[in-house]
Structures are given as structure tokens and as C-alpha cells.
Amino acid sequence: MAVKMQMNGSVMVLLAAIGFGFNPLFAQILFAQGMSVEVVTLCRFILPDILLSFYLRTPSVLWPEVRRMIIIGFANALGVLGYFYALQTLTPATAILIYYTYPFFSLLIGILAFKRSLSVNALLSAVLVLIAASLVIDPSQLSIASKWALLGCFLAPIVFAFQIQYLAKPKQNLTALSRMAWGTMGHLVVLIPLAVCTSPEVAFPHEINGWWALLGLAFLAAALPQYLFVMGAVNTKPEVIAILGAVELVVAMLSCALFLGQALTRLDITAMLLVIVALGIRDPKPITMEHEVAKSVVI
Image (cartoon, rainbow, N blue to C red; front, side):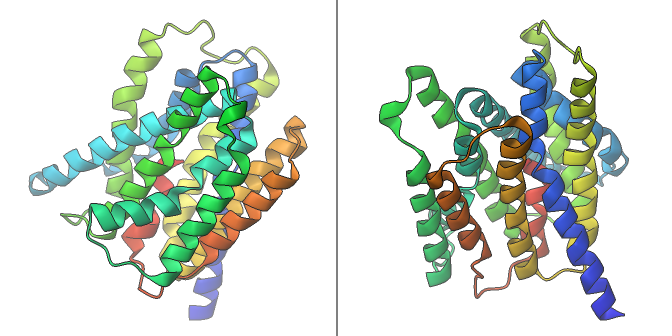
């Protein structure tokens, strides 16, 4: 029975990683329909927020932790905005790979802000990520607007890395679903005003494939993967979760190449393989479940 539960949990985590990997594909289809980054990002989080609203009820003693999760969610929303804007401005492969520099930032933030110890495996993983990023980023080939998009894109992995480090040892205990619920509430705190203030010309898709992409972004790439991840992570070893999570990067890059005709260069493929290796390197220290649940809140 234990083996069966382990297998079912691994399958759920794998399916969740596949679902998360479709975010860039659906977002770019909606951009092509004339929808703004702010509106697309808002659509990305509305359905999960509605589904998670049942878990918002929290004892008053845990309200300080709730405020911390709202702040983290707020920062996450800005990070996703930067990531989606980069998908419009940079080559999608570059934006996707930048997001997966989070192991390096996690290591750096852990040492500087959380006084974590440095392991050889973590250092090796971070170095591989930096090498991968250097292969696809050439500042000399970027315009001024692209350089700003490049800098904005790095906000997503930095925020994600901070979240991973914090949730490895939070100040107060809060259930995973409650953390996700309040985190997504923090997303809406920033995204709803931005969507209203920008007065978008296109609020909804004008073609049927756009509506399919909208449903895919909200359900297939957001709500369903979050549910599968939380349920599957309970019965899956942390090191297995880390390895299966690398599938998200592959799906993100290959789906854009196959369905949108975006070519992958030799350097893109090499960088992707390096990041996959980096994500699969096991840390000798145990990884808490709260550490892994962080992934389901960002993207």
C-alpha cells in the first residue's frame, strides 16, 4: 500500500509540473489576442483564488503569519508580471530560463538573510544555473526596453527563492492550503488595481482559441496543478519532487517551440539541460514539505 501511495503521489507531482509548464504558452496566445500583461496575470490567479477562498479562515493568533503571506503574494504577483512582460519582450526561451535561476538566488538569500549553511551540492547546483543563464543572456544584443525587461524578469526567481527560504522555517505554522489561499489573496491586492488603472483595451479574447487559452491558463496551468501538487507532495519524497519539478522547464520550452513555432537554439537546449541537472542535484540535508509547497504559489 505504501508503494502504491508513493507512486500515486509521484504521478500527481509529475502532472502538476507538466501543467505549470504550460503557463508561457497560454500567456503568449493571450498576448497575441491583444490582452495586456496585467489582465493576463490577473486571469492566471483568479480561479485558484476562488477555489482556495474556503481556506482563508484563520485563527487570530496566526494573523501575523497571514500578513507575511499576503506580502509574499504581493511580491510574487510583481514577479509574475515581470516574467510575463519578459515573455513579450525577450525571446521566450530566455525568459523561461531566467525564471529557473532561482536555485542560485535561493542559495544566496539563504546564506545572507537566513544564515543557512553552504553545502557542496547546493553550490554546484547554483554554479550550473549561472552557467546556463550566461549562455542565453547577451546584454550587448538587447535594446534599452529589453534590458529593463531582462531586469524585471529576474524579480520572479528572486521572490520565489526568498519564499523557499522563508517557508523552509516559517515564523508560525500554517497549513499548506491556508498559505496558498492567503498568498493568492496577496496576488489580487496588486493585480486588480493594476488591471483597472491600466484601462486595458482588450479585457477578453476575441477568438475561440483565445478563450481556450484563457481556460487553460486559469485551470490547466494554475488551479489543477496547484491541487495535484499539494495532494501529491504529501506522499512523495522531497528529492523526487525536486527532480520531477525539472519537467516544468522542459514542457515550458518545448510547448512554445512546438505550438508557437519558436525556434530553440543550440545554446537554449544546452542551458535547459544544465538547469535540469542543477534542479536534480540532491542536497544532503532533509528538505521540509513547506519548502516544496512554495513552488505551487509562484507560477
